[in-house]
Length: 93
Image (cartoon, rainbow, N blue to C red):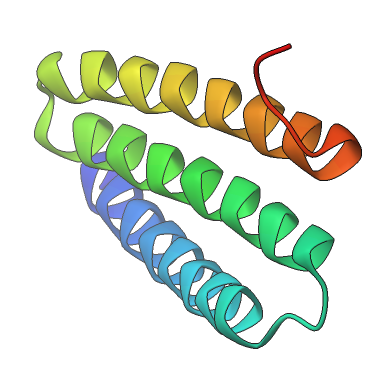
């Protein structure tokens, strides 16, 4: 009973995250400003990290959690670099 409920909840959450990723892709492609595109890209990597975490819970494997940490680190660094580029026009001073 509990495992069926968990499977159903993870399935619903996965659908919600995939829908959020689709909305982020639309904003990334159609965003009127560069700031909108950076924010959409930031949200997109967070959704990808959440999707991988849900897959890790669903399949019970630790490799998904390690992949989520790598995505989080890469996404954070890329967001900081893009924000710095938008503010100053250069990444490395």
